[in-house]
Image (cartoon, rainbow, N blue to C red; front, side, top):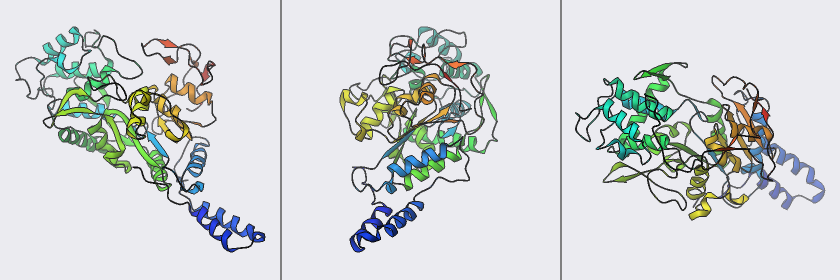
Length: 427
């Protein structure tokens, strides 16, 4: 059971004065309450935010946290995506790059075993590039075999082979999963969760030590070679926790990878939700745990788009079955949601207090942010090396929404009206 609200300082002082001071003396009590609120947990004013965003977030913290005067009920919840929301760059890419450079991918019996959606073309490309001389279950020599490393990373990055063939095919719900995301924990099958966590920790040390702007090479791919925690998000999480919020990470990274990083912002494993692999005999398997009424399988339900809502509802609010996919009542929704991409839009939109959108020019998220239907959206440029302002407008009224079958449609408000095209303003 989650902890109950701590009694608000201002409420205690005001109540005590009301009990002992005549009604005519109410003014000093009000002044005392205002003074108490001034000592509520505050965002660091020396850390820069875009426009008035710090003030907007502080107002939400004051409204919903321990200084709100509320004395009962569950703690308010804040949920953050991880990559490019709490940190700059991608911890899954960093971990995979480290693993490929250190020969940590174990050869599968068949590449088809790694994903139910892997195409014959991808199976052939991986088999030809990585070879069959290494025994099944032993490390592939990806540090030396550039072709093998290239095929693996190209499939991860672009869902295609180096020859340009589709790497995944078939049917999946495009608002619940994406095969390339599921494929990363599936690639680490045969390792223990602790081993995968150790790979992520070693990659973390390298990435934090590398200068901002660094690049690295994987096969022939050039990718970011550094990761940084955002000072603004570290401070926001610190302040939320001090104000009585229950703070979670909800990431489409493999959970052991996310856990290797989340401690850096003061969050433990119990508050880190990622892709949850099925473990047998202590080892990771290609199986992935489901959500709601989607049974365990091969990645049919990930913490991805609508899947992040399901994970929050199921693991934080304890809502089971098909209902976990649905938007809940006010009392069973997060107070703050923070994300940077369309993969985050559903849970960020569910927030009741503030929707923090880090601008990476992703249409569905930024259309909602700029339309600002409930007046609680907070759009902010990336804190390090922000994206350039998008030329033209976001096509909100025509193609910004992704249907479950993967096709595009107009993005609608909650009242059913279509969101008009939006100009990029937080850049």
